[in-house]
Image 1: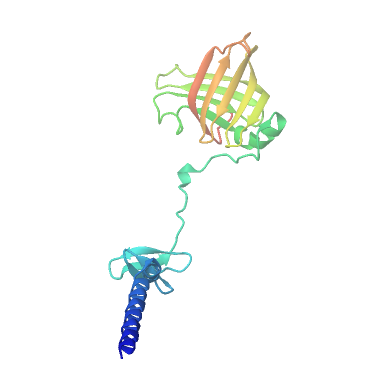
Image 2 (image 1 turned 180 degrees about the vertical axis):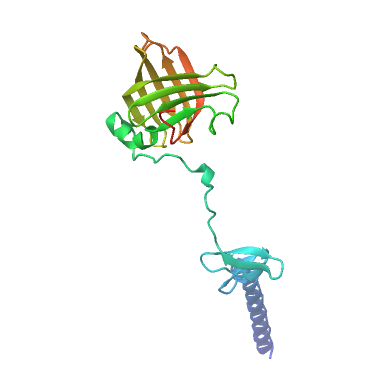
Length: 223
């Protein structure tokens, strides 16, 4: 009789131990992680299971439906930030560089008044014509104070950079004089230059720094 009671007590103890183990297993880390998972196609968001958006869609707040899946859109680039000039595949120097940007250089002007005089009180501009003709103009509101200088130019150097900017150097022949200009044109059309008078040439320092000016095309060659 005592042996039978002892076996009964042992069986009860084993049953209680198994129940505690099962309870611990159901509340352990694995069970907690399983409880946190949501059934597909839902995902957990702020502590609750919500429906996930398909590929190519994102959640957007909607006044009627709350959060709604809408197609992802890529904003169009601002046209004002686009470069003016085509970018070369790499750094170009000499004739290959000039061949690359000549379409932008020939029949162009470098001016400090983009809309042209009389939109500005005074305008200074340099014209480079496709015919090889060159001109410098300084327009003012004062009668007889304008400057109009004409000649021809010969390109002596060119460089084109991978970011779309470019540079050009040329000699100007006008009124029995020979002068020299070097221009750097940024990708956004901003131009800075250097000027050497008759008898002075690089690598000597320039006689005058020019700009900033603005590239514009076409120009009115012959004006």
